[in-house]
Length: 226
Image (tube, rainbow, N blue to C red; front, side, top):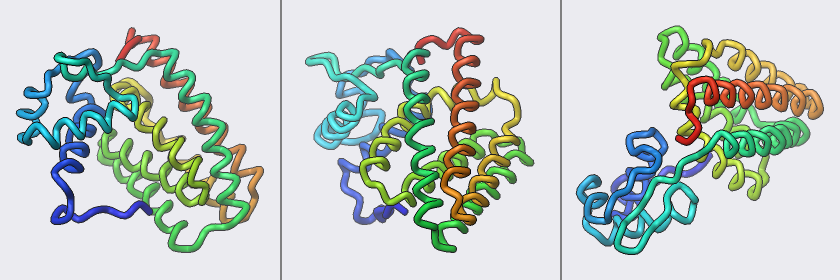
């Protein structure tokens, strides 16, 4: 698991980065929106220096673009962008699933994955799709992290963040994702059985189906740039 920095040790720059990025990913700041540095600083209740450093970091990750004297602009994600992102995620996350099954996971690691699925089940019982989405994303991050492939982990993390806005925006339009929870449980069973090809196939089909559904929702509701 990624190590969480305690708030007492978190620098102002890291805090500004975390808060600004969360506002972008959760669509509090919308695609195409422009803000000058002073406005961002006021939004975060931070001074200019940590605000500027946070903006530079987020720009390097591709979520915003910086313009001299014009501050930042939230970069939109198109339907084509999402198609490409899910094509990549489908392939490399399926590889992560196979790697987890091949090397085997510890009981602690499997327990964390089961806990994420349990939280997804509870969220659906409460009709809390936002909570479900966060638990689902945590499951996917565990899967990739436990594969022990650092380059794969960095790559997937970047694409998950880029797709987060689209997932959150389409949550209210999608069918109740009970099949997704079942897919995750079946994947855990395949990993426990050390069946790498079965794990790869289960997760490939899961990501492929969820990606196709998301793309269709974006097209259906005219969400061409988000």
